[in-house]
Image (tube, rainbow, N blue to C red; front, side, top):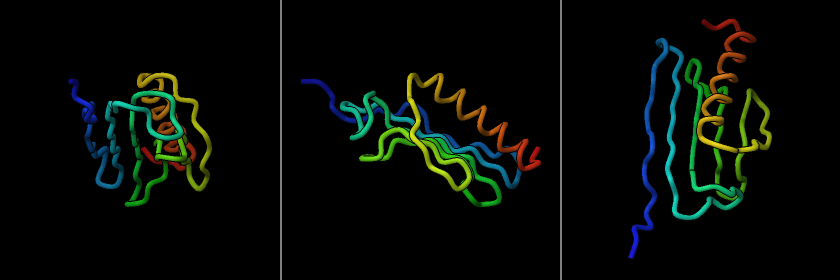
Length: 101
Protein backbone atom coordinates (compact mmCIF):
# COMPACT_ATOMS: atom_id res chain seq x y z
CA UNK A 1 0.00 0.00 0.00
CA UNK A 2 1.26 3.50 -0.79
CA UNK A 3 0.59 6.86 0.81
CA UNK A 4 -2.22 8.58 -1.10
CA UNK A 5 -2.16 11.82 0.87
CA UNK A 6 -1.10 15.16 -0.54
CA UNK A 7 2.48 16.12 0.28
CA UNK A 8 3.40 19.70 1.07
CA UNK A 9 6.14 21.01 -1.20
CA UNK A 10 6.18 24.64 -0.12
CA UNK A 11 4.12 26.95 2.05
CA UNK A 12 5.46 30.37 2.86
CA UNK A 13 4.59 34.01 3.25
CA UNK A 14 7.22 36.61 2.49
CA UNK A 15 6.71 40.25 3.39
CA UNK A 16 8.62 42.34 0.86
CA UNK A 17 7.59 45.55 2.65
CA UNK A 18 4.93 46.41 5.22
CA UNK A 19 2.34 46.52 2.41
CA UNK A 20 3.63 43.90 -0.09
CA UNK A 21 3.25 40.17 0.56
CA UNK A 22 3.95 37.05 -1.49
CA UNK A 23 2.09 33.92 -0.39
CA UNK A 24 2.94 30.50 -1.88
CA UNK A 25 1.34 27.12 -1.27
CA UNK A 26 2.23 24.08 -3.39
CA UNK A 27 1.22 20.46 -2.79
CA UNK A 28 1.98 17.26 -4.68
CA UNK A 29 -1.34 15.44 -4.99
CA UNK A 30 -1.94 11.74 -5.72
CA UNK A 31 -4.37 12.60 -8.54
CA UNK A 32 -4.66 15.77 -10.62
CA UNK A 33 -7.02 18.42 -9.33
CA UNK A 34 -10.22 18.37 -11.41
CA UNK A 35 -9.51 20.55 -14.46
CA UNK A 36 -5.70 20.12 -14.30
CA UNK A 37 -3.49 17.45 -15.86
CA UNK A 38 -0.54 17.42 -13.42
CA UNK A 39 0.23 16.27 -9.89
CA UNK A 40 0.23 19.66 -8.16
CA UNK A 41 -2.25 21.80 -6.27
CA UNK A 42 -1.03 25.39 -5.97
CA UNK A 43 -1.88 28.93 -5.03
CA UNK A 44 0.59 31.77 -5.55
CA UNK A 45 -0.62 35.22 -4.54
CA UNK A 46 0.76 38.74 -4.55
CA UNK A 47 -0.99 40.97 -2.03
CA UNK A 48 -0.66 44.77 -2.04
CA UNK A 49 -2.14 46.91 0.73
CA UNK A 50 -4.24 43.93 1.85
CA UNK A 51 -5.71 43.24 -1.62
CA UNK A 52 -4.76 40.27 -3.79
CA UNK A 53 -3.71 41.83 -7.11
CA UNK A 54 -2.17 38.72 -8.69
CA UNK A 55 -2.87 35.02 -8.17
CA UNK A 56 -2.06 31.78 -9.94
CA UNK A 57 -4.03 28.75 -8.80
CA UNK A 58 -5.76 25.59 -9.93
CA UNK A 59 -9.02 25.56 -8.07
CA UNK A 60 -10.94 22.31 -8.54
CA UNK A 61 -13.21 22.56 -11.58
CA UNK A 62 -11.53 25.70 -12.95
CA UNK A 63 -8.15 24.12 -13.65
CA UNK A 64 -4.99 26.16 -14.06
CA UNK A 65 -5.64 29.89 -14.27
CA UNK A 66 -4.34 33.26 -13.19
CA UNK A 67 -5.92 36.42 -11.85
CA UNK A 68 -4.23 39.68 -12.81
CA UNK A 69 -5.89 42.79 -11.50
CA UNK A 70 -9.57 42.30 -12.24
CA UNK A 71 -9.18 39.66 -14.96
CA UNK A 72 -9.08 35.87 -14.83
CA UNK A 73 -7.68 33.75 -17.66
CA UNK A 74 -6.52 30.18 -18.27
CA UNK A 75 -2.88 29.41 -17.48
CA UNK A 76 -0.90 26.82 -19.45
CA UNK A 77 0.92 24.96 -16.65
CA UNK A 78 4.10 23.15 -17.77
CA UNK A 79 6.43 22.87 -14.75
CA UNK A 80 6.72 24.30 -11.26
CA UNK A 81 9.83 26.17 -12.36
CA UNK A 82 7.93 27.86 -15.20
CA UNK A 83 5.02 28.63 -12.85
CA UNK A 84 7.34 30.41 -10.39
CA UNK A 85 9.10 32.28 -13.23
CA UNK A 86 5.78 33.42 -14.74
CA UNK A 87 4.56 34.53 -11.31
CA UNK A 88 7.75 36.53 -10.71
CA UNK A 89 7.48 38.12 -14.17
CA UNK A 90 3.90 39.19 -13.41
CA UNK A 91 4.92 40.62 -10.02
CA UNK A 92 7.60 42.70 -11.74
CA UNK A 93 5.09 43.80 -14.40
CA UNK A 94 2.46 44.73 -11.80
CA UNK A 95 4.99 46.72 -9.76
CA UNK A 96 6.13 48.58 -12.88
CA UNK A 97 2.59 49.33 -14.08
CA UNK A 98 1.49 50.47 -10.61
CA UNK A 99 4.67 52.26 -9.53
CA UNK A 100 5.49 50.00 -6.59
CA UNK A 101 9.07 49.32 -5.51
